Image 1 (tube, rainbow, N blue to C red):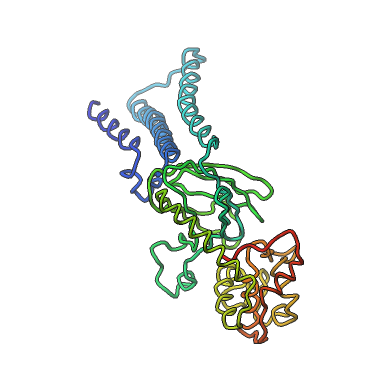
Image 2: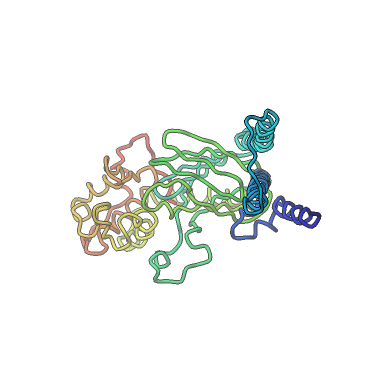
Length: 382
């Protein structure tokens, strides 16, 4: 019995230990990088210990009874009816166990929901299939798309280390700062989840939910959308880079400078070759998931662009459908997501790629005119 007790104590110590030592295992939670993530990790280990204890007691008693009280050894069944003491015991013990689980769980959940006194606030919007980030304190906005090459996805190239967990624009935050997240969605349900930071919240169209974290370790942390959101649900990863305050200030300055420079593209006149080159990148980031890299779409779900009446017809109609989408279909409106220069580029690319050899080009001025001076201003080029 003493050996058994020693072994159980050792297992309990192993399971209750939190940190990188246990998180290194592939079947465990990620190593926590924030206090809230450590609380979740420790709560998980505590609940697992309670479940293990219940398992040992229940199945131990069951197998002991099966072995020691079998008929073949001469045991005779006892006959009795009602026992107040036993009934009190089997009521009190589960109550104590539940309270022992509910109290720490309630503390963690309440802490997770306390988003007061943030050092900075970031609005996160889920789209099919990417994330939009708006830094409300700094005035920085951008979209984050999957950056895994199509060749890896189509199994024509060796998969990289961060296959389907890499993006073109990561979310960047300073270490040690309390970050409040305002999370919503533009189209369908999504869910923003970075396990190492202890942040997970559903993104619901028309509603704003909030969460928070304070990263205490510099590094790169990866997550995913964890709410089934359509065809490319598995292709909208999340990457959060935690940097020093100095590096964060440099990043903000760089993003603001790039936005100022990119905004001038909306007033430029490009040559067709420039637009096609730029448009291919915009298409791969925003259109290829549905319409496919070869422009052939998916029959019955997403129409082909190659040879389509839209891409080979009047350019004004083409611009309109990219700007405003098509109600009642999966075609989203990109007027609020892409700049005038990017829309001009992707329209030009679509009209001159694959079997579409129209030969014309759209310019940012045409996109601005198509917007009609509406209150929805064009976003800066990404």
